[in-house]
Amino acid sequence: MGNDVLLPQPKKRWWHKLAVPMASWAVTARIAVHAAGPLDTFLYRKTGGRMTLSSVLAGLPVILVTTTGAKSGQPRTVPLLGIPDGENIILIASNWGGRKNPAWYYNLKANPEAMVRLNGQNTIYTAKEVTGKEKERCWTRATDVYPGYNAYQKRSDDRTIPVMLLSSKTT
Image 1 (cartoon, one colour):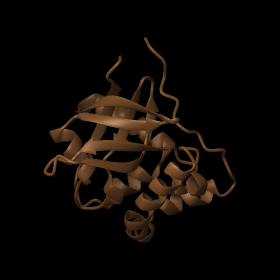
Image 2 (image 1 turned 90 degrees about the horizontal axis):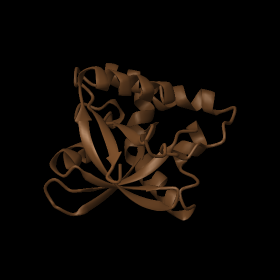
Image 3 (image 1 turned 60 degrees about the horizontal axis):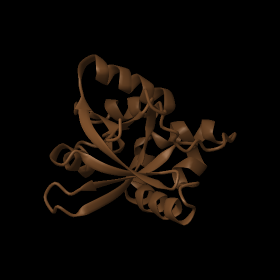
Image 4 (image 1 turned 90 degrees about the vertical axis):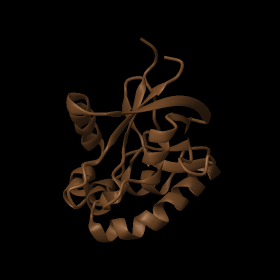
């Protein structure tokens, strides 16, 4: 077995206990869906991955994932909450609890290879959608890190939120 993935672990602050539940509110999601991604990407790049809006406000580990556009074939980079799972990374396609799956999910379904920017290095991963008991296990692990996923599932209009597992191509 190889090395476990070491995702950025922001220093825990007193306000994280307030911010994490607020992040799952519908009103917060409506704002964050447009603002958090660009701000997370900007801060991630400016600080070499040490800081994002989500890490400062809520203490969440954010990574940059570059996929190949399902329709365009062009690189698409998006900041996502990365859940460490041994050598793998769990991604939850919650889209802030919206009615539709996020574009990055369709990109990974069409082109499973993704580049993850983590701790100043780019690593190639292969994505697969998990189902059944594996999905349940990954979902539980993800909600341990960010309980807001449960609220997202409730308000997603009966959309089953997909769970993706990224495995390093070197493992």
